[in-house]
Image (tube, rainbow, N blue to C red):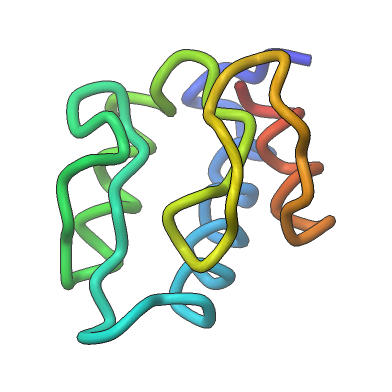
Length: 95
């Protein structure tokens, strides 16, 4: 299912994603931003910045594997998804 960036469920899912990312943040509490512009490459310290990126820009295309927060995988639509089940469900719903 594709949710609109203005859909209330999308906003709630972004919050859940950010909360999970903070728990799984690597050394220095940096979080890779998976928005369309940052492409899961840019490291950001402030989770609120990432939240605003995701709300304003949306997730990058084919973001289906949560691999930059301590998980291993390839970010392609056909990749295996061995992520946190809650985050996996959110990514499926909003991407």
